[in-house]
Image 1 (spheres, rainbow, N blue to C red):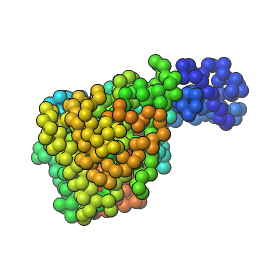
Image 2 (tube, rainbow, N blue to C red):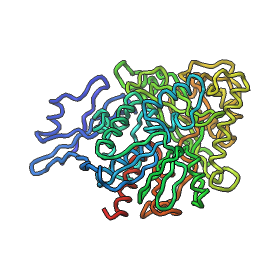
Image 3 (cartoon, one colour):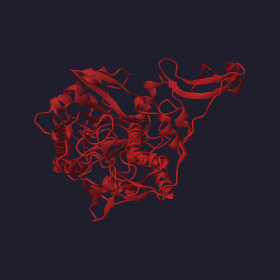
Image 4 (tube, one colour):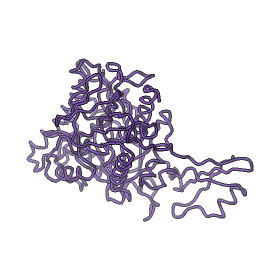
Length: 502
């Protein structure tokens, strides 16, 4: 096998004659596509070519089995970790019973609309809870550095099988789009059910007893020898349930900061050196800075996207970002956050960082309402340069955030160790015109990952306090994002099957 690369202008794809000439008469396969904008912006296409005696073996998904009469395994949560655990169980001959506290992916849209339009929070159906989890409405970004967790192809090829574009198999930074993800999520559910699995919505788990008997808030009981716990990064009631039963929990570091919104045309101009044209993908950015011993970094960047309220309870303000597949909106947004470790927050106990997170979210709500905000989800906001200079912004630029914004001293509302690091980091970003008062900061971006970990045995992946219970994904503290959560769900499902002798 030999590898070769073809570089093209952003306005076209490689021509067949170019590829064949580079391949030298060998069979060729496109492996990766990326944009390189370090100098003249170009497409880079990376290929593999196979000669005589060398065979290219396409990736094939494991076979899915009919499990109508198979032994059940309860999966608590229908986010990425839960969905991919359930799919893996089908390949292992086990019957997944998925319990989801929220609604199906289409019904939850109505509750999210109420949240954005009227500020009404349904604690079980919002941007975090419901079929598909938090990732279902945050662009479907599939980039991950967690290749050591497992074979990324199993996740990407399954997404293609259920409706995603094949482009995600070759793009360096693949994404699906919030407009396409709901159909994919529904296709996965229908496939699991058709093969013998079960889905139960509005099924909030209130107890898990050794045995296992899993009880839900509606009084129903479900039984299985093994339980996979994939409840997401905001399910405090699940942590409290485990603690009340004597289970061990740990405070875990997470990150907090703001959503930063620029006009997309400014990001395009910066990243493409003024050479962006219609038809060229909306530009992205990422950066990492070390400030006073903690990382400050961009997170969940949404080109051509919008900002949305991500609160899971009343009297709090939390923001997230999302993009549709075309990424054609007028604004670019990203979380810019500061790493927070347990030693940065005073106090004891596994919930101290979650309490700290909640206090900041409540502070954002209280300030916005004190200024007469019409919508309970209105966000405190400040222009970037004003924030760094400690000045209240006199005017607000346009924003994609539908509930609206109020001018606020975010440099005072954020915890000092967060605000001060952000104030130092923004002027350092190595992008022309990134540091500008045309950029708007909105508070708060606080749901980057779980501030609590459910400790598990590193070999068996079982909860250390209750063998047979398998915590996984973001909520357990072992993943961050769609792909890493999906991989963790796959690994846990495999561990379950091995423990059951399959």
